[in-house]
Length: 186
Image (cartoon, one colour):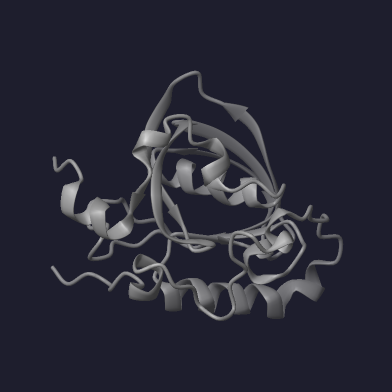
């Protein structure tokens, strides 16, 4: 099977020119709710195109300097992450997690705004999310497994929270290169 190539710049500690990275105060800024959906179409198109260029799983508006409550999620298999389950494209405006499962798991996370670094983060395995679609339709959906993790990660960005804030075991920090070399294999 041929997989999409993971973003080599991110894996080696670099960032795409359109990304806001750790240390930039904009990454920690609060966001505002989307009230006029028609005004977001160009921003959403930009975010979707960038996510696909990066071959990532998710992107939040603050990561590209847009301070609106918008996240984009589309999980695809890549050479670095061939085991992750794929998902369709989700465009979520004003997403809110309205229910968390009692069960949680500790798994690896990385972020385009924290290039070259990964660590394990504990997150609930299932969430219920309410959001507006790009067509302005109010939706409530249940997500579980990997996509639930990605959605939680991206929603955190809307409040200025980065995955490294949620790492409880600092011994799990790893460069992407070392993660590839030393990670546990199934």
